Amino acid sequence: MSATTAAGPKSVEPKSVKPKSAGPKSVKRVLVYVLLSVGLLIMSAPFLWMALSSFKTTSELTASPPVWIPTEWTLDNFRDLLDKLDLPLYFMNSVIVAVLVTVSNLVFCSMLGYALAKLNFAGRNKIFGLVLGALMVPGNLMLLPLFVLMSKMQLIDSYAGLVLPFAAGAFGVFLMRQFMQSIPDELLEAARMDGAGEWYIFWRIVMPLVKPALATLSIFTFLGSWNNFVWPLIATNDPDKYTLPVALATFATDPNKAGGSNGMLMAGSFLIVLPVLVVFIALQRHFTQGIATAGMK
Amino acid sequence: MSTTTGKAAQPAKVQAAPGATASPAAGPKGPRRRGKPSMGVQNVAGWLFSTPFLVLFLVFMAVPIIATLVMSFTDFGLRNVTHPMDANFIGLDNYTQLFSDDKFLKSLFNTAYFVVVGVPLTILIGLVVAVLLNNGIDRARTFFRVGFYAPVVTTIVAVAVVWRFVLDPSDGLVAGLFSEVGLTAPDFLGSETLAMPSMIAMAVWRNVGTVMVLFIAGLQAIPTEVREAARLDGANVWQEFKGITVPLLRPTLLYATVITTIGYLNVFEEPFVMTQGGPSDSTLTVSLNMYREGFNFFHMGYASAMAYVLFVVIMGITVLQLRLLKDNTK
Image 1 (tube, rainbow over the protein chains, first blue to last red):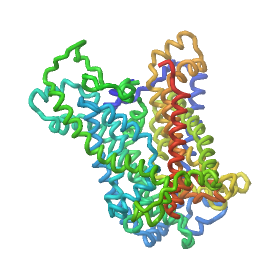
Image 2: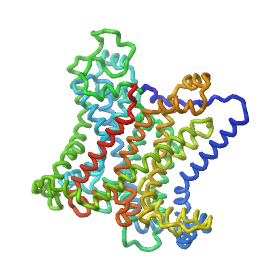
Image 3: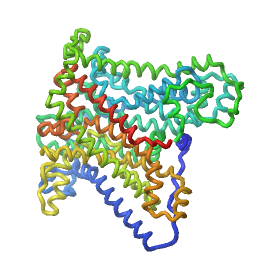
Image 4: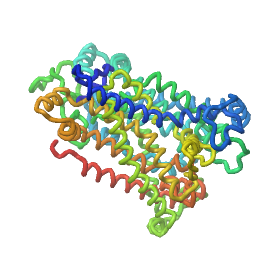
Protein backbone atom coordinates (compact mmCIF):
# COMPACT_ATOMS: atom_id res chain seq x y z
CA MET A 1 0.00 0.00 0.00
CA SER A 2 1.82 3.09 -1.09
CA ALA A 3 1.07 6.44 0.40
CA THR A 4 -0.07 7.78 -2.92
CA THR A 5 -3.35 5.90 -2.89
CA ALA A 6 -4.51 8.29 -0.24
CA ALA A 7 -4.55 11.12 -2.73
CA GLY A 8 -7.56 11.49 -4.96
CA PRO A 9 -10.75 9.99 -3.64
CA LYS A 10 -11.60 6.87 -5.56
CA SER A 11 -15.04 5.49 -5.24
CA VAL A 12 -14.95 2.16 -3.55
CA GLU A 13 -15.82 -0.53 -6.00
CA PRO A 14 -17.81 -3.40 -4.68
CA LYS A 15 -15.36 -6.19 -4.20
CA SER A 16 -17.84 -8.98 -4.08
CA VAL A 17 -17.96 -11.31 -7.02
CA LYS A 18 -21.61 -11.91 -7.65
CA PRO A 19 -22.51 -15.07 -9.44
CA LYS A 20 -26.18 -15.27 -10.33
CA SER A 21 -27.09 -17.89 -7.79
CA ALA A 22 -29.90 -17.25 -5.41
CA GLY A 23 -30.19 -19.59 -2.47
CA PRO A 24 -27.35 -19.58 0.06
CA LYS A 25 -25.89 -16.37 -1.29
CA SER A 26 -29.01 -14.34 -0.70
CA VAL A 27 -29.62 -15.95 2.68
CA LYS A 28 -26.17 -14.82 3.68
CA ARG A 29 -26.93 -11.32 2.43
CA VAL A 30 -30.11 -11.11 4.45
CA LEU A 31 -28.25 -12.31 7.53
CA VAL A 32 -25.53 -9.69 7.05
CA TYR A 33 -28.15 -6.97 6.65
CA VAL A 34 -30.02 -8.10 9.75
CA LEU A 35 -26.85 -8.16 11.88
CA LEU A 36 -25.73 -4.74 10.66
CA SER A 37 -29.17 -3.24 11.17
CA VAL A 38 -29.29 -4.46 14.76
CA GLY A 39 -25.82 -3.03 15.30
CA LEU A 40 -26.85 0.27 13.77
CA LEU A 41 -29.87 0.46 16.03
CA ILE A 42 -27.65 0.00 19.09
CA MET A 43 -25.21 2.61 17.81
CA SER A 44 -27.87 5.22 17.19
CA ALA A 45 -30.04 4.54 20.25
CA PRO A 46 -28.21 6.97 22.59
CA PHE A 47 -28.46 9.73 19.98
CA LEU A 48 -32.17 9.11 19.47
CA TRP A 49 -32.66 9.09 23.22
CA MET A 50 -30.81 12.38 23.50
CA ALA A 51 -32.86 14.00 20.74
CA LEU A 52 -36.20 12.76 22.06
CA SER A 53 -35.42 13.62 25.70
CA SER A 54 -34.47 17.17 24.75
CA PHE A 55 -38.08 17.85 23.79
CA LYS A 56 -39.80 16.11 26.71
CA THR A 57 -41.60 17.86 29.53
CA THR A 58 -40.19 17.47 33.03
CA SER A 59 -42.90 15.04 34.03
CA GLU A 60 -42.19 12.79 31.05
CA LEU A 61 -38.45 13.03 31.58
CA THR A 62 -38.74 11.59 35.06
CA ALA A 63 -41.48 9.08 34.31
CA SER A 64 -40.67 5.53 35.29
CA PRO A 65 -40.83 3.42 33.21
CA PRO A 66 -39.74 6.05 30.71
CA VAL A 67 -41.85 7.49 27.93
CA TRP A 68 -40.32 6.59 24.56
CA ILE A 69 -41.77 9.36 22.43
CA PRO A 70 -42.78 12.67 24.00
CA THR A 71 -46.54 13.08 23.93
CA GLU A 72 -46.24 16.84 23.99
CA TRP A 73 -43.14 18.34 22.47
CA THR A 74 -41.68 21.31 24.31
CA LEU A 75 -38.78 23.71 23.93
CA ASP A 76 -38.68 24.42 27.67
CA ASN A 77 -35.42 22.52 28.15
CA PHE A 78 -33.64 24.71 25.63
CA ARG A 79 -35.19 27.84 27.07
CA ASP A 80 -34.21 26.96 30.63
CA LEU A 81 -30.72 26.08 29.51
CA LEU A 82 -30.26 29.41 27.76
CA ASP A 83 -31.43 31.14 30.93
CA LYS A 84 -28.92 29.18 33.01
CA LEU A 85 -25.93 29.15 30.72
CA ASP A 86 -24.58 31.77 28.37
CA LEU A 87 -24.50 29.33 25.47
CA PRO A 88 -23.87 31.85 22.68
CA LEU A 89 -20.74 32.97 24.51
CA TYR A 90 -19.42 29.42 24.98
CA PHE A 91 -20.29 28.66 21.38
CA MET A 92 -18.24 31.64 20.23
CA ASN A 93 -15.34 30.61 22.46
CA SER A 94 -15.40 27.11 21.01
CA VAL A 95 -15.54 28.44 17.45
CA ILE A 96 -12.77 31.00 17.92
CA VAL A 97 -10.42 28.48 19.50
CA ALA A 98 -11.20 25.84 16.89
CA VAL A 99 -10.65 28.25 14.00
CA LEU A 100 -7.33 29.49 15.38
CA VAL A 101 -6.11 25.95 16.07
CA THR A 102 -7.14 24.82 12.60
CA VAL A 103 -5.52 27.69 10.71
CA SER A 104 -2.24 27.40 12.60
CA ASN A 105 -2.17 23.64 12.06
CA LEU A 106 -2.80 24.02 8.33
CA VAL A 107 0.14 26.40 7.98
CA PHE A 108 2.68 24.90 10.39
CA CYS A 109 2.01 21.22 9.73
CA SER A 110 2.11 21.82 5.98
CA MET A 111 5.40 23.66 6.26
CA LEU A 112 7.08 20.87 8.16
CA GLY A 113 5.34 18.27 6.01
CA TYR A 114 6.83 19.90 2.92
CA ALA A 115 10.30 20.02 4.43
CA LEU A 116 10.12 16.36 5.42
CA ALA A 117 8.70 15.21 2.09
CA LYS A 118 10.57 17.34 -0.41
CA LEU A 119 13.58 19.05 1.09
CA ASN A 120 16.82 17.29 1.62
CA PHE A 121 18.41 18.71 4.72
CA ALA A 122 20.64 17.50 7.49
CA GLY A 123 18.59 16.36 10.45
CA ARG A 124 15.46 15.62 8.46
CA ASN A 125 15.13 12.06 9.69
CA LYS A 126 15.73 13.14 13.26
CA ILE A 127 12.90 15.65 13.03
CA PHE A 128 10.64 13.00 11.53
CA GLY A 129 11.56 10.75 14.44
CA LEU A 130 10.50 13.56 16.77
CA VAL A 131 7.15 13.83 15.00
CA LEU A 132 6.55 10.09 15.33
CA GLY A 133 7.57 10.29 18.97
CA ALA A 134 5.18 13.20 19.55
CA LEU A 135 2.38 11.07 18.10
CA MET A 136 2.94 8.55 20.87
CA VAL A 137 3.06 10.93 23.83
CA PRO A 138 -0.17 10.99 25.83
CA GLY A 139 -1.45 14.53 26.27
CA ASN A 140 -2.07 14.07 29.98
CA LEU A 141 1.64 13.85 30.66
CA MET A 142 2.20 17.55 30.07
CA LEU A 143 -0.81 19.01 31.85
CA LEU A 144 0.79 19.97 35.15
CA PRO A 145 3.85 21.90 33.95
CA LEU A 146 1.78 23.30 31.09
CA PHE A 147 -0.55 24.81 33.66
CA VAL A 148 2.39 26.28 35.58
CA LEU A 149 3.93 27.61 32.35
CA MET A 150 0.67 29.19 31.22
CA SER A 151 0.12 30.73 34.66
CA LYS A 152 3.60 32.21 34.50
CA MET A 153 2.91 33.56 31.02
CA GLN A 154 -0.40 35.03 32.22
CA LEU A 155 -2.22 32.99 29.60
CA ILE A 156 -4.77 31.21 31.79
CA ASP A 157 -8.26 32.32 30.71
CA SER A 158 -6.99 33.58 27.36
CA TYR A 159 -7.53 32.32 23.83
CA ALA A 160 -3.77 32.06 23.39
CA GLY A 161 -3.60 29.70 26.33
CA LEU A 162 -6.28 27.50 24.81
CA VAL A 163 -4.77 27.52 21.31
CA LEU A 164 -0.97 27.42 21.66
CA PRO A 165 -0.53 23.88 23.00
CA PHE A 166 -2.43 22.56 19.97
CA ALA A 167 -1.12 24.95 17.33
CA ALA A 168 0.89 22.29 15.47
CA GLY A 169 -0.02 18.66 15.92
CA ALA A 170 2.14 15.71 14.97
CA PHE A 171 -0.76 13.99 13.24
CA GLY A 172 -1.08 16.92 10.85
CA VAL A 173 2.61 16.82 9.99
CA PHE A 174 2.39 13.09 9.35
CA LEU A 175 -0.67 13.50 7.13
CA MET A 176 0.75 16.37 5.08
CA ARG A 177 4.09 14.67 4.60
CA GLN A 178 2.29 11.56 3.41
CA PHE A 179 0.35 13.53 0.78
CA MET A 180 3.20 15.74 -0.33
CA GLN A 181 5.42 12.77 -1.09
CA SER A 182 3.18 11.96 -4.02
CA ILE A 183 3.96 15.27 -5.74
CA PRO A 184 6.42 14.54 -8.54
CA ASP A 185 9.91 15.88 -7.89
CA GLU A 186 10.24 16.91 -11.54
CA LEU A 187 7.56 19.53 -11.04
CA LEU A 188 9.45 21.16 -8.18
CA GLU A 189 12.77 20.85 -9.98
CA ALA A 190 11.32 22.61 -12.98
CA ALA A 191 10.12 25.45 -10.81
CA ARG A 192 13.54 25.68 -9.17
CA MET A 193 15.16 25.80 -12.59
CA ASP A 194 12.93 28.77 -13.37
CA GLY A 195 14.38 30.43 -10.30
CA ALA A 196 11.46 30.00 -7.94
CA GLY A 197 12.33 30.05 -4.26
CA GLU A 198 11.18 27.36 -1.85
CA TRP A 199 8.68 29.71 -0.20
CA TYR A 200 7.05 30.43 -3.55
CA ILE A 201 7.04 26.77 -4.53
CA PHE A 202 5.43 25.82 -1.23
CA TRP A 203 2.60 28.36 -1.41
CA ARG A 204 1.99 28.47 -5.14
CA ILE A 205 2.67 24.92 -6.30
CA VAL A 206 2.56 22.48 -3.40
CA MET A 207 -0.31 23.87 -1.33
CA PRO A 208 -2.81 24.02 -4.20
CA LEU A 209 -1.93 20.42 -5.09
CA VAL A 210 -2.71 19.09 -1.61
CA LYS A 211 -6.12 20.71 -1.19
CA PRO A 212 -7.82 17.39 -0.40
CA ALA A 213 -5.33 16.75 2.39
CA LEU A 214 -5.82 20.27 3.70
CA ALA A 215 -9.57 19.67 3.77
CA THR A 216 -9.10 16.43 5.69
CA LEU A 217 -6.72 18.06 8.14
CA SER A 218 -9.10 20.99 8.65
CA ILE A 219 -11.97 18.72 9.52
CA PHE A 220 -9.97 16.62 11.93
CA THR A 221 -8.31 19.55 13.63
CA PHE A 222 -11.49 21.58 13.95
CA LEU A 223 -13.41 18.66 15.40
CA GLY A 224 -10.57 17.70 17.70
CA SER A 225 -10.57 21.22 19.08
CA TRP A 226 -14.37 21.33 19.28
CA ASN A 227 -14.42 18.12 21.31
CA ASN A 228 -11.32 18.89 23.38
CA PHE A 229 -11.94 18.88 27.10
CA VAL A 230 -9.09 18.26 29.51
CA TRP A 231 -6.88 21.22 28.70
CA PRO A 232 -9.73 23.77 28.37
CA LEU A 233 -10.99 22.52 31.72
CA ILE A 234 -7.63 23.28 33.30
CA ALA A 235 -6.82 26.44 31.37
CA THR A 236 -10.05 28.28 32.19
CA ASN A 237 -11.11 29.51 35.61
CA ASP A 238 -13.26 32.36 34.42
CA PRO A 239 -16.65 31.03 33.18
CA ASP A 240 -16.57 33.69 30.46
CA LYS A 241 -13.77 31.78 28.78
CA TYR A 242 -15.35 28.31 28.97
CA THR A 243 -15.73 26.34 25.80
CA LEU A 244 -18.93 24.36 25.27
CA PRO A 245 -17.71 21.01 26.66
CA VAL A 246 -16.27 22.69 29.77
CA ALA A 247 -19.51 24.57 30.36
CA LEU A 248 -21.57 21.41 29.94
CA ALA A 249 -19.33 19.27 32.14
CA THR A 250 -19.19 21.91 34.85
CA PHE A 251 -22.96 22.13 34.78
CA ALA A 252 -23.37 18.34 34.71
CA THR A 253 -21.08 17.69 37.65
CA ASP A 254 -22.24 20.60 39.77
CA PRO A 255 -23.31 19.02 43.08
CA ASN A 256 -25.87 21.71 43.95
CA LYS A 257 -27.86 21.69 40.74
CA ALA A 258 -31.45 22.83 40.70
CA GLY A 259 -33.87 19.97 40.14
CA GLY A 260 -35.22 19.10 36.72
CA SER A 261 -31.97 19.84 34.93
CA ASN A 262 -31.87 16.44 33.22
CA GLY A 263 -33.76 17.90 30.32
CA MET A 264 -31.41 20.86 30.21
CA LEU A 265 -28.36 18.59 30.13
CA MET A 266 -29.88 16.54 27.34
CA ALA A 267 -30.70 19.71 25.42
CA GLY A 268 -27.15 20.95 25.97
CA SER A 269 -25.63 17.70 24.76
CA PHE A 270 -27.96 17.81 21.78
CA LEU A 271 -26.83 21.33 20.85
CA ILE A 272 -23.14 20.37 21.08
CA VAL A 273 -23.44 17.08 19.22
CA LEU A 274 -25.85 18.17 16.49
CA PRO A 275 -23.45 20.43 14.52
CA VAL A 276 -20.79 17.74 14.77
CA LEU A 277 -23.09 15.07 13.38
CA VAL A 278 -24.32 17.33 10.57
CA VAL A 279 -20.76 18.20 9.54
CA PHE A 280 -19.71 14.58 9.78
CA ILE A 281 -22.56 13.28 7.63
CA ALA A 282 -21.97 15.99 5.04
CA LEU A 283 -18.23 15.31 4.85
CA GLN A 284 -18.08 11.66 5.86
CA ARG A 285 -15.82 10.65 2.99
CA HIS A 286 -13.00 12.85 4.28
CA PHE A 287 -13.18 11.26 7.70
CA THR A 288 -12.84 7.67 6.69
CA GLN A 289 -10.04 8.61 4.29
CA GLY A 290 -8.11 10.53 6.90
CA ILE A 291 -8.29 7.68 9.39
CA ALA A 292 -7.36 5.13 6.78
CA THR A 293 -4.40 7.25 5.65
CA ALA A 294 -3.08 7.52 9.16
CA GLY A 295 -3.29 3.76 9.47
CA MET A 296 -1.24 3.07 6.40
CA LYS A 297 2.25 2.80 7.64
CA MET B 1 2.90 -0.71 3.12
CA SER B 2 5.11 2.15 2.16
CA THR B 3 8.64 1.60 3.25
CA THR B 4 9.25 5.29 3.72
CA THR B 5 8.18 5.54 7.30
CA GLY B 6 10.15 2.49 8.25
CA LYS B 7 13.21 3.99 6.69
CA ALA B 8 12.80 7.34 8.31
CA ALA B 9 11.96 5.95 11.69
CA GLN B 10 15.50 4.71 12.15
CA PRO B 11 17.85 7.61 12.42
CA ALA B 12 19.67 6.63 9.29
CA LYS B 13 22.19 8.78 7.51
CA VAL B 14 20.60 11.37 5.32
CA GLN B 15 20.98 10.14 1.80
CA ALA B 16 21.26 12.27 -1.27
CA ALA B 17 17.97 11.16 -2.78
CA PRO B 18 15.39 13.87 -2.32
CA GLY B 19 12.04 12.80 -1.01
CA ALA B 20 11.43 9.25 0.01
CA THR B 21 9.38 8.28 -2.99
CA ALA B 22 11.16 6.33 -5.61
CA SER B 23 10.63 8.56 -8.59
CA PRO B 24 11.28 6.84 -11.88
CA ALA B 25 13.29 9.82 -13.07
CA ALA B 26 15.97 9.21 -10.50
CA GLY B 27 18.37 7.29 -12.68
CA PRO B 28 20.38 4.34 -11.47
CA LYS B 29 23.30 6.49 -10.58
CA GLY B 30 22.85 10.07 -11.61
CA PRO B 31 25.02 12.13 -9.32
CA ARG B 32 24.35 15.29 -11.27
CA ARG B 33 20.83 16.65 -10.92
CA ARG B 34 19.74 19.54 -13.03
CA GLY B 35 17.92 22.34 -11.29
CA LYS B 36 18.74 21.17 -7.81
CA PRO B 37 19.65 23.95 -5.47
CA SER B 38 22.84 23.34 -3.60
CA MET B 39 22.74 21.40 -0.35
CA GLY B 40 23.21 24.68 1.48
CA VAL B 41 19.97 26.17 0.18
CA GLN B 42 18.03 22.98 0.94
CA ASN B 43 19.50 22.88 4.41
CA VAL B 44 18.53 26.43 5.24
CA ALA B 45 15.07 26.07 3.71
CA GLY B 46 14.49 22.75 5.47
CA TRP B 47 15.28 24.19 8.87
CA LEU B 48 13.30 27.37 8.25
CA PHE B 49 10.25 25.35 7.27
CA SER B 50 10.68 23.23 10.38
CA THR B 51 11.10 26.13 12.78
CA PRO B 52 7.48 26.93 13.74
CA PHE B 53 6.66 23.34 14.58
CA LEU B 54 9.94 22.82 16.41
CA VAL B 55 9.49 25.94 18.55
CA LEU B 56 5.94 24.95 19.53
CA PHE B 57 7.06 21.38 20.11
CA LEU B 58 9.90 22.51 22.32
CA VAL B 59 7.89 24.94 24.46
CA PHE B 60 4.64 23.02 24.78
CA MET B 61 5.79 19.41 24.65
CA ALA B 62 9.49 18.74 25.16
CA VAL B 63 9.97 21.18 28.04
CA PRO B 64 6.76 20.12 29.84
CA ILE B 65 7.67 16.44 29.52
CA ILE B 66 11.02 17.11 31.19
CA ALA B 67 9.41 19.48 33.68
CA THR B 68 6.94 16.78 34.72
CA LEU B 69 9.85 14.49 35.50
CA VAL B 70 11.64 17.19 37.51
CA MET B 71 8.44 18.10 39.37
CA SER B 72 7.87 14.46 40.28
CA PHE B 73 10.98 14.60 42.50
CA THR B 74 9.73 17.67 44.40
CA ASP B 75 6.99 18.67 46.82
CA PHE B 76 5.56 21.02 44.20
CA GLY B 77 2.35 22.58 45.56
CA LEU B 78 -0.04 25.45 45.04
CA ARG B 79 2.38 28.19 46.13
CA ASN B 80 4.91 26.89 43.60
CA VAL B 81 2.62 27.76 40.71
CA THR B 82 3.77 31.34 41.26
CA HIS B 83 7.23 30.39 42.61
CA PRO B 84 8.24 27.18 40.83
CA MET B 85 11.86 27.46 41.92
CA ASP B 86 10.96 27.28 45.60
CA ALA B 87 9.82 23.67 45.40
CA ASN B 88 11.92 21.30 47.50
CA PHE B 89 13.70 18.30 46.09
CA ILE B 90 12.45 15.21 47.90
CA GLY B 91 14.04 12.45 45.84
CA LEU B 92 11.92 9.39 45.23
CA ASP B 93 9.46 10.09 48.04
CA ASN B 94 6.53 10.69 45.69
CA TYR B 95 7.15 7.38 43.96
CA THR B 96 7.52 5.34 47.12
CA GLN B 97 4.39 6.97 48.49
CA LEU B 98 2.51 6.13 45.29
CA PHE B 99 2.98 2.42 45.66
CA SER B 100 1.69 2.39 49.20
CA ASP B 101 -1.24 4.61 48.29
CA ASP B 102 -4.35 2.42 48.16
CA LYS B 103 -6.22 4.97 46.12
CA PHE B 104 -3.54 5.02 43.44
CA LEU B 105 -3.28 1.22 43.36
CA LYS B 106 -7.03 1.07 42.98
CA SER B 107 -6.95 3.55 40.10
CA LEU B 108 -4.20 1.49 38.48
CA PHE B 109 -6.33 -1.62 38.83
CA ASN B 110 -9.41 0.16 37.45
CA THR B 111 -7.49 1.41 34.44
CA ALA B 112 -6.09 -2.06 33.81
CA TYR B 113 -9.61 -3.50 34.03
CA PHE B 114 -10.86 -0.93 31.56
CA VAL B 115 -8.07 -1.77 29.10
CA VAL B 116 -8.04 -5.56 29.48
CA VAL B 117 -11.78 -5.86 28.92
CA GLY B 118 -12.35 -2.85 26.70
CA VAL B 119 -9.61 -3.21 24.09
CA PRO B 120 -10.33 -6.79 22.95
CA LEU B 121 -14.05 -6.07 22.80
CA THR B 122 -13.52 -2.93 20.74
CA ILE B 123 -11.13 -4.66 18.33
CA LEU B 124 -13.30 -7.74 17.96
CA ILE B 125 -16.55 -5.90 17.33
CA GLY B 126 -14.82 -3.45 15.00
CA LEU B 127 -13.37 -6.35 13.01
CA VAL B 128 -16.71 -8.16 12.80
CA VAL B 129 -18.49 -5.04 11.58
CA ALA B 130 -15.75 -4.39 9.01
CA VAL B 131 -15.94 -7.95 7.68
CA LEU B 132 -19.74 -7.76 7.48
CA LEU B 133 -19.57 -4.45 5.66
CA ASN B 134 -17.02 -5.85 3.27
CA ASN B 135 -19.18 -8.81 2.38
CA GLY B 136 -21.60 -8.32 -0.43
CA ILE B 137 -23.14 -5.10 0.78
CA ASP B 138 -22.45 -2.41 -1.70
CA ARG B 139 -25.43 -0.11 -1.86
CA ALA B 140 -25.89 0.43 1.85
CA ARG B 141 -22.22 0.31 2.79
CA THR B 142 -21.75 4.06 3.23
CA PHE B 143 -24.97 4.33 5.19
CA PHE B 144 -23.87 1.71 7.72
CA ARG B 145 -20.33 3.02 7.88
CA VAL B 146 -21.58 6.49 8.75
CA GLY B 147 -23.86 5.05 11.43
CA PHE B 148 -21.13 3.04 13.10
CA TYR B 149 -18.58 5.83 12.90
CA ALA B 150 -20.84 8.63 14.18
CA PRO B 151 -20.11 8.12 17.90
CA VAL B 152 -16.37 8.58 17.27
CA VAL B 153 -16.72 12.17 16.13
CA THR B 154 -19.12 13.30 18.81
CA THR B 155 -18.05 15.36 21.80
CA ILE B 156 -17.14 12.90 24.52
CA VAL B 157 -18.37 15.12 27.35
CA ALA B 158 -21.79 15.39 25.71
CA VAL B 159 -22.17 11.67 25.01
CA ALA B 160 -21.00 10.86 28.53
CA VAL B 161 -23.82 13.06 29.83
CA VAL B 162 -26.24 11.29 27.51
CA TRP B 163 -25.08 7.86 28.67
CA ARG B 164 -25.63 8.89 32.26
CA PHE B 165 -29.31 9.28 31.43
CA VAL B 166 -29.41 6.26 29.15
CA LEU B 167 -28.30 4.16 32.13
CA ASP B 168 -30.53 5.84 34.71
CA PRO B 169 -32.21 3.03 36.68
CA SER B 170 -35.62 4.66 36.86
CA ASP B 171 -36.19 6.81 33.78
CA GLY B 172 -33.36 5.81 31.41
CA LEU B 173 -33.44 4.11 28.04
CA VAL B 174 -32.05 0.84 29.36
CA ALA B 175 -34.49 0.88 32.27
CA GLY B 176 -37.25 1.22 29.70
CA LEU B 177 -35.98 -1.85 27.83
CA PHE B 178 -35.85 -3.80 31.10
CA SER B 179 -39.39 -2.85 32.01
CA GLU B 180 -40.63 -3.84 28.55
CA VAL B 181 -39.65 -7.41 29.37
CA GLY B 182 -40.85 -7.15 32.96
CA LEU B 183 -37.53 -6.67 34.75
CA THR B 184 -36.23 -3.95 37.01
CA ALA B 185 -33.04 -2.32 35.83
CA PRO B 186 -30.08 -2.27 38.22
CA ASP B 187 -28.47 1.04 39.14
CA PHE B 188 -25.65 0.66 36.65
CA LEU B 189 -23.54 3.67 37.56
CA GLY B 190 -24.38 3.50 41.24
CA SER B 191 -23.13 -0.04 41.74
CA GLU B 192 -19.51 -0.85 42.47
CA THR B 193 -19.62 -3.98 40.33
CA LEU B 194 -21.57 -2.54 37.38
CA ALA B 195 -20.20 1.00 37.06
CA MET B 196 -16.98 0.00 35.31
CA PRO B 197 -18.60 -2.47 32.88
CA SER B 198 -21.12 0.26 32.00
CA MET B 199 -18.30 2.63 31.27
CA ILE B 200 -16.58 0.01 29.14
CA ALA B 201 -19.82 -0.47 27.22
CA MET B 202 -19.87 3.22 26.47
CA ALA B 203 -16.22 3.26 25.43
CA VAL B 204 -16.74 0.31 23.09
CA TRP B 205 -19.78 2.02 21.61
CA ARG B 206 -17.77 5.16 21.04
CA ASN B 207 -14.59 3.63 19.61
CA VAL B 208 -15.77 0.70 17.54
CA GLY B 209 -16.07 3.01 14.53
CA THR B 210 -12.38 3.86 14.47
CA VAL B 211 -11.37 0.22 14.48
CA MET B 212 -13.99 -0.57 11.83
CA VAL B 213 -12.69 2.11 9.46
CA LEU B 214 -9.11 0.89 9.87
CA PHE B 215 -10.09 -2.70 9.16
CA ILE B 216 -12.19 -1.71 6.15
CA ALA B 217 -9.15 0.07 4.72
CA GLY B 218 -7.07 -3.03 5.44
CA LEU B 219 -9.59 -5.35 3.83
CA GLN B 220 -9.90 -3.13 0.75
CA ALA B 221 -6.14 -3.28 0.38
CA ILE B 222 -6.16 -7.03 -0.09
CA PRO B 223 -5.96 -7.59 -3.85
CA THR B 224 -8.99 -9.31 -5.34
CA GLU B 225 -6.68 -11.56 -7.38
CA VAL B 226 -5.32 -13.11 -4.21
CA ARG B 227 -8.81 -14.00 -3.06
CA GLU B 228 -9.83 -15.32 -6.43
CA ALA B 229 -6.72 -17.45 -6.67
CA ALA B 230 -7.53 -18.95 -3.30
CA ARG B 231 -11.08 -19.68 -4.40
CA LEU B 232 -9.86 -21.32 -7.58
CA ASP B 233 -7.67 -23.50 -5.42
CA GLY B 234 -10.82 -24.60 -3.67
CA ALA B 235 -10.37 -22.74 -0.39
CA ASN B 236 -13.56 -22.41 1.61
CA VAL B 237 -14.64 -19.23 3.38
CA TRP B 238 -12.95 -20.15 6.65
CA GLN B 239 -9.68 -21.15 4.98
CA GLU B 240 -9.70 -17.95 3.02
CA PHE B 241 -10.27 -15.95 6.19
CA LYS B 242 -7.53 -17.75 8.07
CA GLY B 243 -5.01 -17.99 5.25
CA ILE B 244 -5.45 -14.62 3.58
CA THR B 245 -7.47 -12.13 5.56
CA VAL B 246 -5.89 -12.60 8.98
CA PRO B 247 -2.22 -12.52 7.94
CA LEU B 248 -2.73 -9.57 5.61
CA LEU B 249 -4.63 -7.65 8.28
CA ARG B 250 -1.84 -8.07 10.79
CA PRO B 251 -0.42 -4.54 10.42
CA THR B 252 -3.92 -3.07 10.73
CA LEU B 253 -4.62 -5.16 13.80
CA LEU B 254 -1.38 -3.97 15.35
CA TYR B 255 -2.09 -0.33 14.67
CA ALA B 256 -5.69 -0.54 15.87
CA THR B 257 -4.68 -2.37 19.05
CA VAL B 258 -1.92 0.09 19.89
CA ILE B 259 -3.99 3.24 19.43
CA THR B 260 -7.01 1.80 21.23
CA THR B 261 -4.86 0.69 24.16
CA ILE B 262 -3.16 4.08 24.47
CA GLY B 263 -6.54 5.79 24.37
CA TYR B 264 -8.03 3.51 27.01
CA LEU B 265 -5.04 3.81 29.32
CA ASN B 266 -5.64 7.56 29.34
CA VAL B 267 -9.36 7.30 30.00
CA PHE B 268 -10.52 10.44 31.79
CA GLU B 269 -13.69 12.11 30.48
CA GLU B 270 -16.05 9.18 30.94
CA PRO B 271 -15.49 8.76 34.68
CA PHE B 272 -15.19 12.51 35.16
CA VAL B 273 -18.64 13.16 33.73
CA MET B 274 -20.50 9.91 34.42
CA THR B 275 -19.46 8.93 37.94
CA GLN B 276 -16.77 11.34 39.18
CA GLY B 277 -14.79 8.21 39.95
CA GLY B 278 -17.43 6.63 42.17
CA PRO B 279 -19.07 4.70 43.64
CA SER B 280 -16.34 4.31 46.28
CA ASP B 281 -13.56 4.85 43.74
CA SER B 282 -14.63 1.89 41.60
CA THR B 283 -14.28 3.96 38.42
CA LEU B 284 -11.40 6.17 39.52
CA THR B 285 -8.86 5.91 36.70
CA VAL B 286 -5.21 6.94 36.83
CA SER B 287 -5.84 10.04 34.70
CA LEU B 288 -8.77 11.16 36.84
CA ASN B 289 -6.79 10.47 40.00
CA MET B 290 -3.91 12.52 38.63
CA TYR B 291 -6.20 15.40 37.69
CA ARG B 292 -7.68 15.50 41.17
CA GLU B 293 -4.36 15.31 42.97
CA GLY B 294 -2.91 18.00 40.72
CA PHE B 295 -5.75 20.43 40.18
CA ASN B 296 -8.14 19.90 43.07
CA PHE B 297 -5.67 19.29 45.91
CA PHE B 298 -2.63 20.88 44.22
CA HIS B 299 -0.30 18.01 45.12
CA MET B 300 1.39 18.72 41.85
CA GLY B 301 4.65 16.93 42.57
CA TYR B 302 2.74 13.83 43.56
CA ALA B 303 0.48 14.09 40.52
CA SER B 304 3.54 14.42 38.29
CA ALA B 305 4.90 11.16 39.65
CA MET B 306 1.55 9.60 38.81
CA ALA B 307 1.69 11.00 35.29
CA TYR B 308 5.14 9.50 34.82
CA VAL B 309 4.17 6.09 36.10
CA LEU B 310 1.27 6.09 33.65
CA PHE B 311 3.58 7.25 30.87
CA VAL B 312 6.08 4.47 31.54
CA VAL B 313 3.25 1.92 31.66
CA ILE B 314 1.90 3.19 28.33
CA MET B 315 5.33 3.08 26.71
CA GLY B 316 6.04 -0.37 28.08
CA ILE B 317 2.75 -1.81 26.89
CA THR B 318 3.09 -0.20 23.47
CA VAL B 319 6.57 -1.63 22.98
CA LEU B 320 5.34 -5.01 24.17
CA GLN B 321 2.45 -4.97 21.73
CA LEU B 322 4.72 -3.99 18.88
CA ARG B 323 6.99 -6.92 19.76
CA LEU B 324 4.19 -9.45 20.15
CA LEU B 325 2.16 -8.53 17.12
CA LYS B 326 4.85 -7.46 14.73
CA ASP B 327 4.96 -9.46 11.57
CA ASN B 328 8.36 -11.11 11.58
CA THR B 329 8.19 -12.15 7.97
CA LYS B 330 8.67 -8.60 6.75
